[in-house]
Length: 215
Image 1: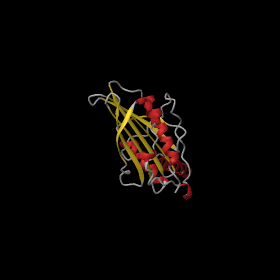
Image 2 (image 1 turned 120 degrees about the vertical axis):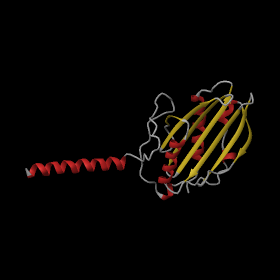
Image 3 (image 1 turned 90 degrees about the vertical axis):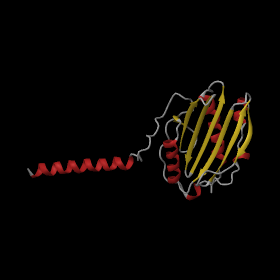
Image 4 (image 1 turned 90 degrees about the horizontal axis):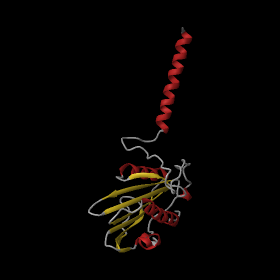
């Protein structure tokens, strides 16, 4: 009888331990949206990046004073026939980094916008929280994980009709304490292919990511 009670007690302890482990490793839910499922139909989509150990101090990035309005190469947008009307270099809100908003017009005078943003947080953990927060608060639809940039990256897409057909694509990537985001939106008489916008946004994202120096 004693052995039976002890056996049940050990099983109960194992179950409790497993639940505690799952809670510790299952990520932060706190009412936010679940992590988007990877999509494998897009050629730019790959498997989600695996977690990595905290970076050494000398591997941290410094994204301040980049002058992204000047340094961003708009060559990937050439075939969209967009013209820059103005730029806004205001840095990211409440965090260290650089950004540039390009307000543009298409050849048939529709609205187009490009936002390029690089944020260097105090730690990889802080950067991870910013990356996750973007996933949770965006009104755009997750379009899958991206390969070959940063430790984790993914894309988002949205189509709307504010009096014209407006196609948006956003990509963001995190590596160490760095988070880079590119949002590209183009209006027209018809929706643009998401694959076209995704490729252009990704090209600008990769160029921006590699341009950020280490601290």
